[in-house]
Length: 509
Ligand code: ADP
Image (tube, rainbow, N blue to C red; front, side, top):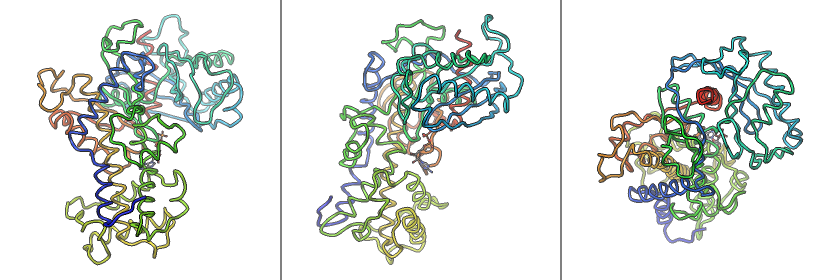
């Protein structure tokens, strides 16, 4: 809660706290690289840098029909994916509800249900043709259907098609599952029902995103999720994965799942604001997933809510809404990130010209000192505030609307810049880029297009999110390299990606 003489000084202070200049971005990137290196050399570090056992990426020429299974939260998704071999695919899917009883019951019951769902899907939806790829091992029956399993819970993966469940999250507490190989649990259920389905790959969603982008764009280096949470995966040289002592592979590379949401758990790299401390303290996992709390959809709305409240509560005079709050504003996680998206969309509008953005100092904005164009945008934002936050129209001024717009902007700008930073750090790590002033002689393949597959509501829908990522990448590794970065939305990563992972597993067998 602020006590102040001059409202503008409070706004300027918050603005400074949420601003990341070039030097800061570069020093945080160096911290990111240090944590990556620690994670590549040791198990149990904040950046887990998990070897995924996927050694290659597709180039778009792959063919075959595969099943994909996605067990994440409330739904179980079964897909059939047909890879056409020309960077295109077709996908049919069906969702099955996972009941509370199944989530908290015996593992056998849950996996029998999953197998039954796959069986039901095969009966009603799937095409009859399952052309096993030529790469299929000889000892597998010709009519076997291959399946990739996207399992979004913590596992200790020991091979592409094996991994022990470490713990349940997201409301699951199925008995007799933790400590068991999740692929085996699934395969046993298929076998009990005499189904000719073979699960060959256990897939993380970031890896699925990377592979999907690689297939549709003809190559990719990074896969990243910016949705409820955030994480990324990239192709690393095997020799740099110091902690890995499993079998080598021909290509000498392996995809690493960074689990980058945990960057800065030590709280030593990012400029933390009082709002970030509050969010962390009130979260279910204080001290964990600290980077994620700066970036992802689950927390951006909450960050904006905390800033709004601090200005509502400021003394001696409130800076927002005449000191009045509302139900949604008083509720923990009461403000969804999509609210911010709407506000920024209205502000940016169709008119991208700079003059639309000129305002008097925020604290002195009022209905008469903004031009008609700005006033009409602020009027629309005011309506969204009334609808979403539950104020009466008379309680919201255009000045309130302008300040709320600015709060959304600084919060999302910081998130977009940090998202780009994670990508830039990986490009330095993989010798695709150097910091400003460093010799570019060491840049690997200096003319190559660098593929980055992305997925998640934030990167898909938040206005200018990708632009902020690019701004940050250009600042950290220079605009020449930034121009070579091809960021592409890889939708359906958990379906197509799992299918591509199953195919990759057959190649690696
Ligand atoms: P998930 O990551 O769970 O698979 P999504 O990628 O859809 O799912 O991300 C959901 C998150 O995105 C939620 O935290 C939500 O607040 C946020 N979100 C939903 N719609 C939007 C939007 N239009 N703009 C920005 N964020 C959004």
